[in-house]
Every structure is written in structure tokens, then in C-alpha cells.
Length: 430
Image 1 (cartoon, helix red, strand yellow):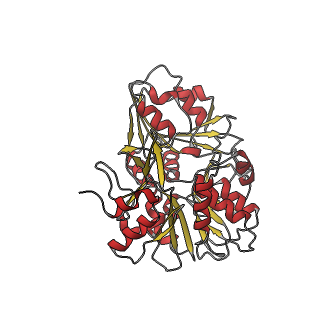
Image 2 (cartoon, rainbow, N blue to C red):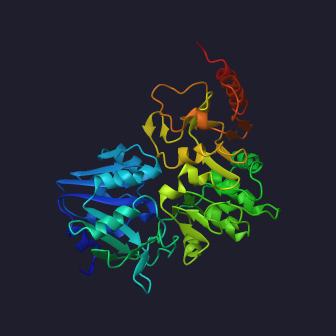
Image 3 (cartoon, helix red, strand yellow):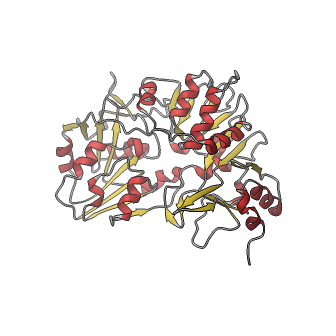
């Protein structure tokens, strides 16, 4: 049966008062459809499965709506703190897929670029962990696949035949057309601390390396420094997220992907977010390919890249090397994502390096705290275990941990902490 073309409001009316809906992380979300659902009067028992909302959808705060998220963003934190039923499901990014398969939502929905001449609708900015469940919903007679077509989303590519990164128009049950703007994610401005961290990090990145980097002021400063450098070296890209900074590296002529060992000659990622210039640049650009997260984030595949350098952040690290990256004072702040996967690959080959970068301190309510700790406080939640860390970088230097004893690691970490806190890290009271 051909897909029905409905308005967002008409599509929203197809959802039961008691129902289950699944949608992708962040830039894969059909914002027009989800907004229209929020205009419905009420729901009895509507369960949503998703991650990292890109808008403050009124739907989330309605009575009878239960949202289960595998990655918190600003919107999740806002709704949780204002009393909505928002619950965190602990999972790294690769496990989003089996969790969604287990949930088996009756309705799966996604945004897509308009169909090409053969009827394929590119999944645009998100390959992630929902692709297979989208196809399953489209193939099952008792399930519903809603595709929101939006010409503002770029047409991007996978690696066919196994990973086309597209939904065929014949798979969809309902097609919604909107022209809502794509959510932008500007890079945070740099500052002297992040610039110094970037300078140190760049000393670990040699021509021919393959890079993974995410969003944030430190990764942005690192990639910007590489793009602006006078050297003629080139790099490869194998990254969970494709960012504005990675586009700048391409534009500087410093990405050729010829030294990788896996997915050669193209940059690969599983989702992208940045400024509108990035979305325009990605449109029709075959130099960047979008693949499912179970491939991009698999440590054994990451490690096949030659001279892989991964760049990640942290909230806090204790003197043993345990990392907290997704919670603050025991409260969920973001998500696990690919943090552990990309850090875990370091050590498979001596030429591979994993960089965990963070400012040495943070100021909370006017009080300066060290982010290098003697020990994690009670209630802290470890994101990545100590044995997987390689290099920790602050504005005070780099602590290389691989092959060091417990005591040597503590000394190295204390040496990159703010001077005011070093003694307490090495000799905690009590």
C-alpha cells in the first residue's frame, strides 16, 4: 500500500491515546511531527523512546506521557527538573539499537531528505542506532513508519549496498512534509585555557593520524588549530559525530583518508551537527559517509585505523584514572555515548592514542573545584574505568598513564591538576 501523505496534525491524530513511539537521537528527529503531537489534548499512556531532544517539545510535559531517554541534553534536563516523567536508560550508543529493538515501538518516526529519482529518502544527519528498527517498522503490517520529509536537510550518503543510509518511499506508511529549519549547534568560543589544552593535544597528533572528535570548546579548538597549522600533513576521520570543526579541516585540504586501514578514502561518522554552513557543505558531498553506530563505535573496527587518535572530554577524573563524563554530583547530565568505546581502543597498538581533555578546575556557585580528584565522591557514577585511560590533558600538561603503576598514575594526574589542589590529590585527608 502506498504511503499516505498527511499534514503533521493529521499524522499526529493517527497515534493512539495509549501507544509507543520510537525516534532517533538529536538531528534525526521529525520536529514537525513531534511538535504536532504536543498539540493533542491528552494521552492516557504514551511511551516515547528517544535520545537528546533538539527542542522543548510540549509533548514531553503532558500528563500520560512517559519519555525514556538514552542520552540527556538540555531539553531532557529541563523537563526532568520541571516534573515531567523523563527517565534515563543507561546505555552506550551501540546499545541504543538492541534497546530500541527490545522496545519494538508500534510507531517509528524519522526525518529525511526528499526522495531522489529512485524514491530513496536520505536519512540525512543521522545513521545512529535506529536504522534497522525503522526498516522493521516499515516492513511490518501492524506497525507504522512515519517519515517527515524536509528539504532543509542535506542529502547524505552511506556505503551501499549494505548501508545505503536511506529509506525508500515504498517503506513508509505516512509521509509528512515540513520546511522547519535544521537545529544549529554553534561551536562554543575558545578561551586561553582551551587554547592551551588544544596546543598540548596537537603534539600527540601527527600527519597521517585518523581522528575522532566530538562537540565542545576543547575539540573545536583542537581541530581549528590543526586546520590553521602551517604544516602540509593530512588526516583521516573516523568519528561518532561529524562537526563544523571537521568540515573546517576538510576545507583546509587536510583530510584525505588515505592512511586509515578501514573505510579508506572517505570520512565516516554516524551523525552530524553544527552550523547551517555544515549542512549545506554536506549536501551531496560523497567525501563524508554515514554508517550505523554499531560499525562506527565498535572498538575492534576503530582499532583497525592506522595511528588512531581519539579526543574526548570528562567532568572529573580521580587519581586512579576513573572517569565521570555523563553525570554531575550523581545527577544525569548527558549520556555515555561512545565515550568508553573510543577510549577503549587505545593500547591495541602503541601508535594509537586516546586523549581525555578537560580544564583543571570548574567554578560552582563561586567556589573553585578541582576536576582532578583524590577520589570520587559518594554517589559519583563512573563512565569509563581506570584501566582504559591513556593520556589526560589539562592546561597544565599531559599525564601519560599507559603502563604506569597506580602510584605513578596518581603522581602524573596530580601534576596536571591546578597547583592549589595537587597536595590534596596525592595526600587526601584521613
